[in-house]
Image 1: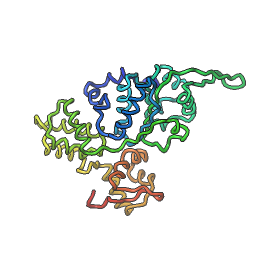
Image 2: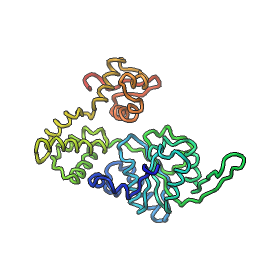
Image 3: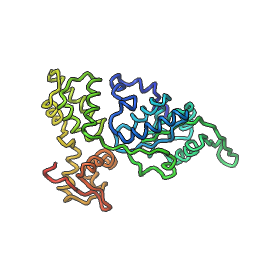
Image 4: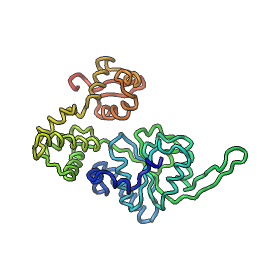
Length: 326
């Protein structure tokens, strides 16, 4: 477990440009304007009262900046940040070690909190509400319980599957934010900053082309910029033009709508093999030779957002995904 626990110090051990790409302040954090407006109020109130921020739940598709937002909140409050994940907290002692390492007003970030084991989840309830940890000393007839006082802290949890979080846990979060896909213009602003940090020269049209094919996701747009940079380096060009960006992205199998090979394969199977649906997720996963969670968490959110598919009680159905759109 200790190997998966990160602190602000270990985050700074990342590759230099990776560390710089991650925005620190709320001002540097692009997109999610509604969340930023609300968060700025909550942060100012917490600073004024010198109290820990209320517990926060961040949910939405992967790559939209949930971990980054947790880092930003810690930076804005000037407190330490501890990072772990649901699967890493296997035993009660794992959770206790993390909680005991916190100082007053510190932030604990738990990624993939929907994968937290139920016994660990139940131990977390009093820690969140009363800042105490109830520990059983011995099991059986001679068992006894000890109450360990914890510092007042803020739990920030992230999940891509909010529906899997048990209601008792979900109700203990005072602040809940749903992160939406980014607009092309917002991704363009992210790319301008990333290009400057990486020392990449690129035409605005080239960055806009990358933004348009990035599935509304900052993680993807930064990744695509690095790959396009590789193509430009091999071609020995000083500045990435729009044409080079288009050719590079096509070589990466990313089309003008941001669809990759798996997306197109998904839509083709749905239209040609299943007549546009409805078809169950497990059937689709078996036909594609992919894990159902991969389809549900990585592939489908963007297809749903773009209006290509629909989720119905009978299964997945094609919406706008006609032959001309593929």
